Length: 274
Image (cartoon, one colour):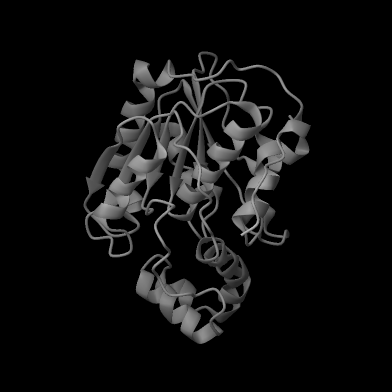
């Protein structure tokens, strides 16, 4: 396993009967640790691979990336040692956007696709970004916006020293979402399940159903009690649904291309300039 791959993925021990690898993409400001409890609660034949973005936790000394292009460009080569086996993607909010673009670029370069993509708490990517721009706000109004989102503990928001540490990655992550421009492309030939919070005022039910445009299979939309961070409020229910999706024989057998070996040099994504 390369050093680059080890930096990007907080990997669990591989089960002898491993059938599937699940790449988990965190929301804005989050790190691989938000999926730490998943490792012991998913089926033993599913290996959890939480994605660790630069600028947080074990990569706190690295500069955070602030464009989707930079993230995917760096992530794809690190995935090379893993995608010779069946794999799936789970992403929440910003993580869903990264998962989607990673799948598109991976397919473009290698012909490989996840056996399933689980999108959580994110509007369809072709929908215009309707929220206010936050990444370039001054510190005080930026902090107030974080408070309104209810995703950052109050004790963190009131800790000026800690906020100075985490604010750069938060700004970078918001910039990823706020400057993203969807580039037209065909639907992915892999199933998608879409998760949403019933009290999520950031993501409408209609915008969740709009993901249908991006897959050739009928989407399955599941709604949960809770706000934008329902994946924590309803963690057990979310994990149960993920287990059911990934354990289904139809998912594990849905491999659209042969898993052949390839050079990491082939995993250099191509983005059109916007």
